[in-house]
Length: 75
Image 1 (cartoon, rainbow, N blue to C red):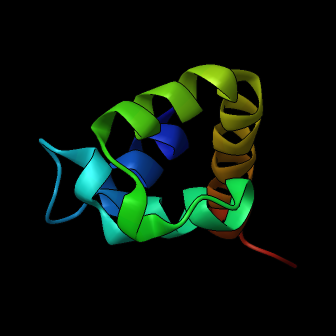
Image 2: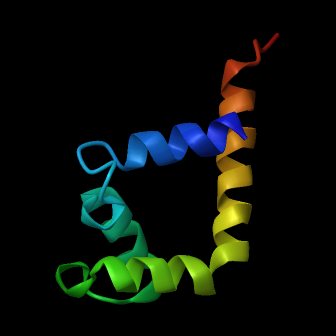
Image 3: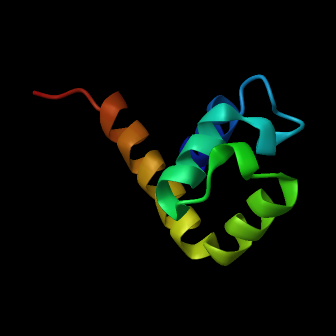
């Protein structure tokens, strides 16, 4: 859960109260969905997150796993 919150916090830097203006999130949505970043608005971001909520949650769980693995000392 901390990894998911960390990802969201970092990915919305500069636009935390308006995540639909985050260049990183717009780029991710554009890459995943094919929508053009310049045309994505608040409604589009919310609709995308709702439609892809299970994939998004899976992605957030993956970011948490990667964060934990990077913190684990390797022998």
